[in-house]
Length: 79
Figure (spheres, rainbow, N blue to C red):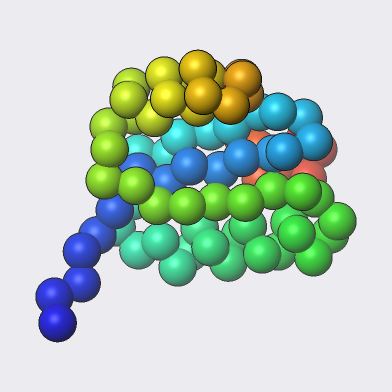
């Protein structure tokens, strides 16, 4: 079985209605671990890999879910 790598990883903060799109990810396991770490600290965040382009993801999440794209890291403990 051939493993497909994601081109982007979307990180969403449901409470703050913010999201990031991280480009050029190869190993999503690293980002999944960071999401789980923030969840264990009580943050309502989730992340998912995508093969879509950053521009497409930003447009979809803003239009479909009403979330705001930010360049500030959603996974940062200060956010």
